[in-house]
Length: 452
Ligand code: FAD
Image (cartoon, rainbow, N blue to C red; front, side, top):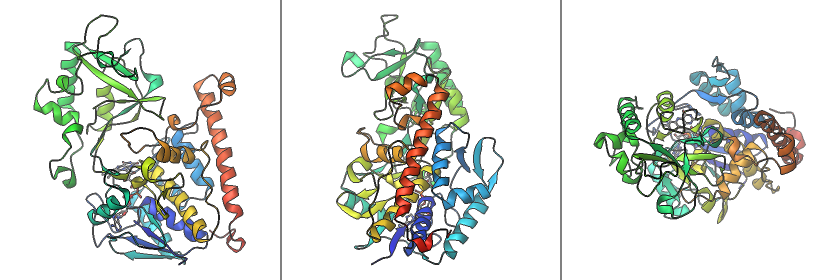
């Protein structure tokens, strides 16, 4: 069977289908809309963008730019269409969502090797090469199937995400390092609040504008009690947070010798050594307001956030347990995962995993080697996180510099300033990625070269 089956015509599925077909391999692309809608999509178009219309920064020397640059060099269909349908948004690549989805739908439908089938897939096909790209809102029937495939604890439905702060922007004059009762490692930084600061924070949180929950978020018990968003918890009483995620017990501030009135704990991420998450601070406060709110926390006055707190349904597999660095299921390598369900977060990250999964699925059908993407590149770093993250509490990530390998010591001595360091990391990333592309392209059927 030389046809690749792709389930899900979202960002990852469409990019995967295009890449696979461009390698000369026929594709069957299944999309359940409009037969069955998700709680967030509203149209029948492929690659519908469900929320913000931003593909994030396209400013040189940023991690989101590097990721897009790699995709441009890999001839990404969706990035090309994003650029053709862009709307003014400063340094960001923002798109006209209607034109974007319409154009992707038309290009995919017109490809001679892609057949689009409007049908909900409820079973993982028993044979052939398959890419599962059904996204964070995978339909229930297929999610149950994936649960069986992945093992009971390996499919996550997380409702709430805590914010992540860039380590270099924390005020170390204010925060103190300590574990509760001095037990455990000293991976925590603690932001101390006095009574006035705590009360002011609670007032601001109660007043902050939150994202209105969509129908699917309001169902069931809504949240796991253990991951209750702080904006929900605070409504149960002004002191709830002080007895919950902001509990100060066992944390003595070395500068005062006393426990503060309340504390926000920052936990170092394992692979993301340059960043800290705000423990228990998942929330649905709108991003603009959230930044101002979080900057009220002592020690975070100038903080830059790599990720804001979010609340939405999210279906994704535990990559380190289930997947190889080539996005294949370890115990069933004919199956690939791509997109948000593979354990990345964000539009561009999702389509990036679709791009490489499409290339690899084609290579598998054609009997060619599946070359892993080099770790030095942005895509390689994302996949390294997906396959090797050591954090027990696995959560999908956006691309950031914290994921990229740090410069070697001798280079770090030469490139001392942050912008120079980043420029050097980007140069190394692009060089490594180009090498991978050349190696993958070397196996490309010559009759297709130049066709696009
Ligand atoms: P999707 O784009 O969701 O595509 C999956 C496709 O699979 C859908 O078209 C769906 O209809 C289809 N499908 C599902 N189940 C089946 C089935 N059984 N059979 C056939 N087809 C099926 N990221 C950002 O960068 N910015 C944001 O602002 C943002 N907002 C988000 C808001 C919400 C509510 C959610 C849930 C996610 C958001 N994300 C955002 C995260 C993520 O980047 C997007 O969800 C992104 O679209 C993921 O791409 P994907 O291809 O993995 O999934």
